[in-house]
Amino acid sequence: MPKIPGWLGKAFILLAGIALGAVVCLVAGSAIMRYVFGSPFRFTEEIVGLLFAAMAFFSIGYCALLDREIKVDIIYESISSPLQKIGQLIAAVARLIFAVWIGLLVYDFASLSFRIGSRTDMTGIILWPWMSLFAVVVVGIILSVFYRSAAPRLDVEDEL
Image 1: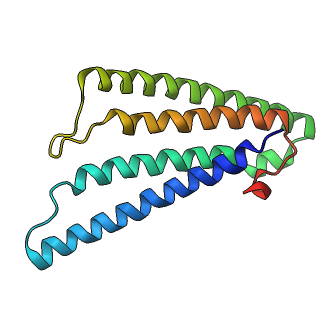
Image 2: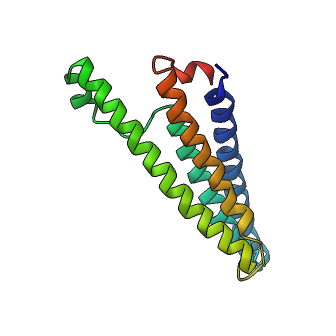
């Protein structure tokens, strides 16, 4: 079986880290420009918003690959193994429903943005490529559900 979560998880966390680093650099640069030179970057807010959304979605994909969503451990650990398996199945179905639902919303939103040529207000950045990034994360979440159901005992962290 290919190690999809390993390389995909590395890509997600790397892209989230790059987005975070870019956010920090842009905000710091804008603050320096504002207070030292009296003229801030006018494009910072738009780009930072897009990068922050990308960082959040890539982090969600990474957490889905590692099966690190919120769990109530005290309850999960106190139930029997068959009930844990049922809980894992319910979690996988919920994750899949979430991914498909968000995927459909992202597709509708990105395709509408593409059709009307949507751009940001101040700098005119084309929005549909940014929205399409989130579709990649949705595909990663769906792959993680099927990968985990095929190899539930595999610890994906070892591959990362």
